Image (tube, rainbow, N blue to C red; front, side, top):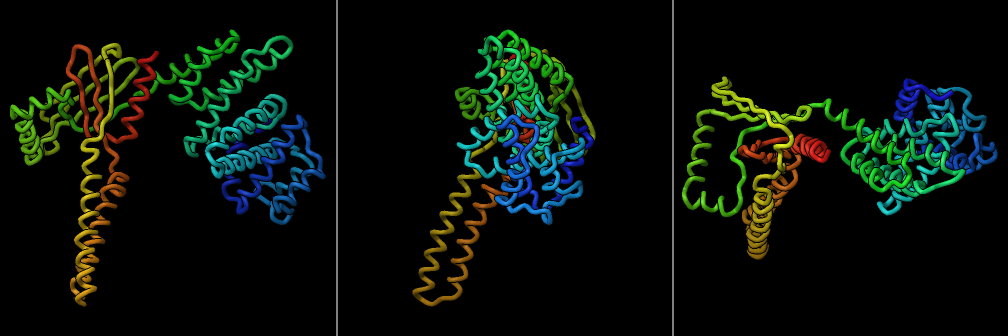
Length: 409
């Protein structure tokens, strides 16, 4: 019988703590792949032993908390817990191998995996896909992207099948599109939309529509929000130039400086809930709310949205100038010190070079890594644009993806 969710979790936890997990994972995936390629429920003991010698797997170094992997594969799994352990090691081995491959080889490896899953998922009790899905939640996003593209190509390749092969192909495409829906995210929605538009088989078209509807219902249940400070909306270049030439922009800058000195803060919360966009404003003075307001807009009033990093090139410019000046002035002092034998100039020159390089490193690497904040602006039909500043980039991207998905529907 297939492994349960609890058994799969226990096996995945066991794999993470095995000392030779990388080698054992590659070995198990090799054996399981051979079984899938041969469409066999068992692997010959001679083949298991030959591949074990190839990976340097022996009974004394293949032990785990849930059993000995080599012994298990020699005789074959006997219960659902052993099936779970094999699947967990196979998923671990495949993902590690995928990480070590060049980008151009990953697509081929993912397509081979999908072809093997066609047999393993529908013809055996192995649940390799379930282990892969759990691992993909914590591994790098490109692994899920490679798998999505492999599933997409496999569905389109088999979509035009007819005759006696049609029931088998429809079964394969059903689990492939179910996997795409489980991966979730905007990328899966785009792939399912492409399948809906390009599918020739009515069953494939209907399944893509069903999964898109399910994802839409799940997406509408979740509320997304961003929180930051209220800023003036960005404008076109002629309007911005006129504001600076007239002095209005300078007055606004002085107003923001005065608010900062008085500890006066204007906060803005933008929340996407169901099919509406909620905008809440608060004015705080010394932590106390002086004024608050709330507005609600239907999604059809949203005409666009974008995020923008304020003064994106300023840090790079200051960093490059500091590095250049530090090297130039410090280099000149070091040259003079080496010619005249002045230890003080030698120390000052080395300090200037190190200071310039350190400032460039801090501005272009350390600061962006710790802040990663942007401004988010939403354009509204019949209303003033909403711009919220100092938003976490991850939160802004998540809101933009959800907004794009709901607007496209």
